[in-house]
Image 1: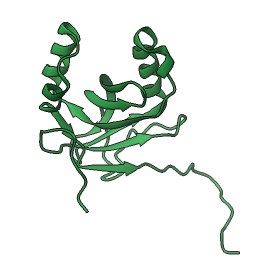
Image 2 (image 1 turned 120 degrees about the vertical axis):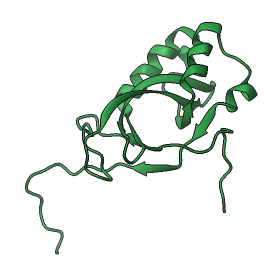
Image 3 (image 1 turned 135 degrees about the vertical axis):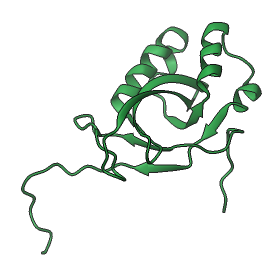
Length: 145
């Protein structure tokens, strides 16, 4: 069954949320090439608040078109963004749906939030979402038993 898309732009980028606070993905988990920092306007839906476009520097693999956001950094920036306008929703569940065109995001920063339907015209959903896993190096007991 095909899932409905939120944004009206064609899907772009793949996305992975790094839930490991002590680990940074400096190499792409798909192609093993180095990732580079790049700023994206992430489109996030927050329970009890609604949509939000947040400028966030993430790790990016241009070869695989993969964006890796570190959860601890993302949540810290969400707290900063929400503490003035909606402190009651800090800590609520959220979901990163895609990216917004940077020029439109920058215009909304200057002019204020626009119409939600107009916003959707400039959002691209993610092509694919990855569950990122990390196994620390070192000795691990065998699971042969």
